[in-house]
Length: 150
Image (cartoon, rainbow, N blue to C red; front, side, top):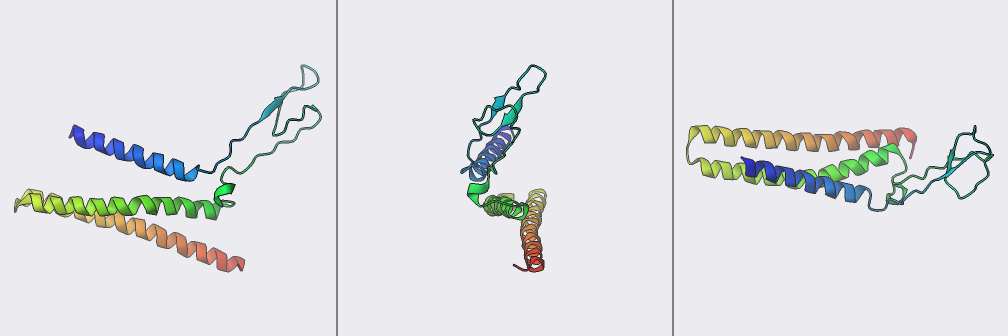
């Protein structure tokens, strides 16, 4: 049981690392400079430039995902869904293989066969949810694009 838990933790860490790398691969580093006011009563101002004029209170925030082509919320959701599909499909395939091994290892034992059937059922339900989420998101995205007139 402990070995299964360690394997599960390893898989979770691996996939979260993969998602993080894919999302933030082209993210630029944003530097800010704190500029103090002209006297001690003025609060410090964070600016995105090297200007030291205390009267200039401008703040710029760059889109960290702009280099990846993410400029709006629908595109962000689409990118996240693509990552989920990319990770989810191999997991579903591995889970189906695991359920098959459970059927083979059951050797006619009714309790083990019941467990294998439950595993296969849950895998199919998970795959249906994954596919359904993708289909619904694509349908909503196409509807929004049609309403916009693009």
